[in-house]
Image (cartoon, rainbow, N blue to C red; front, side, top):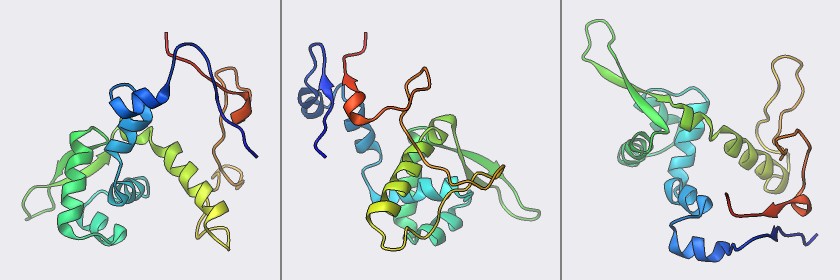
Length: 159
């Protein structure tokens, strides 16, 4: 299967990629370019909020987790919220922002792809719809609700 996007208009994504100024893919990769950033976002989706949870569950060092969490907060994917246990000092928990939550379909797509292509057993976990129990996956749809494949797409400059 060799299918690519059809380019329309005056658009050369290689120029945007090397310049880094316009390509949303390049900007996204720059922001999430480390394994640890993806693992921390995964754990935020899985319900981690405290620093120790992120370190333990993502199997990162304190220094790596601290650096990456700071970056994710700085870029608005997570936010800090103060909390205090009785008799303890004030600490901060990490919460997903709207911007961070919008990354969820990307994480699901990576999981779905990895389960299909990188695992002999179909992967260690799957997402199930709580309402009916069916498996959940990602797919591309146009704004009118049509399912689209790569061969159905044009890459065009935004107006």
